[in-house]
Length: 180
Image 1 (cartoon, rainbow, N blue to C red):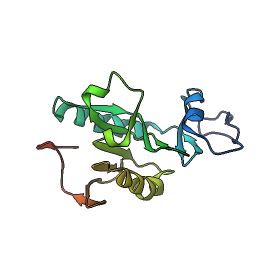
Image 2: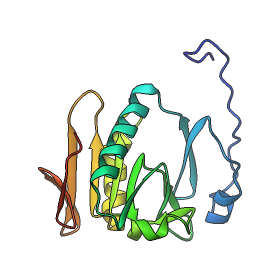
Image 3: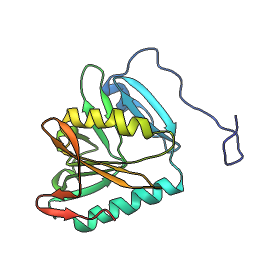
């Protein structure tokens, strides 16, 4: 197979012979070439996003950073444990908003620490982001979920009575956030 960059595509992962636990996830090497998540103990590996996706991530993260109250922080590509034992789900949203006091003391977040999860849609992730992650984040109690389509609209969802509903604007602690 060839990549769109003209070089040969290589895959360095071998299929695990069992479902992974959080300790197995922790033992995986860092991977700058792939986007890696764990879904109910199953390793999910996909290509890193392209420039348009990265540009949208930076734009949203910057907008959040400049408008958030000081007790909240914006992070890019941080691990979130959505479900724990026995076979965890660890998602890596494009952007999250968390309490600022956890930034220096954690490598990953529990879902109950995440105030906002943002996913920028990509050709290979639209269904996962719109359906699977919305269900997982909602079930885990993440109060706001934002879907950014680089070629279209931004959808802001707020968790109400256990389900996400579309809202006109993202509001955190009385501050209305313009995602531009």
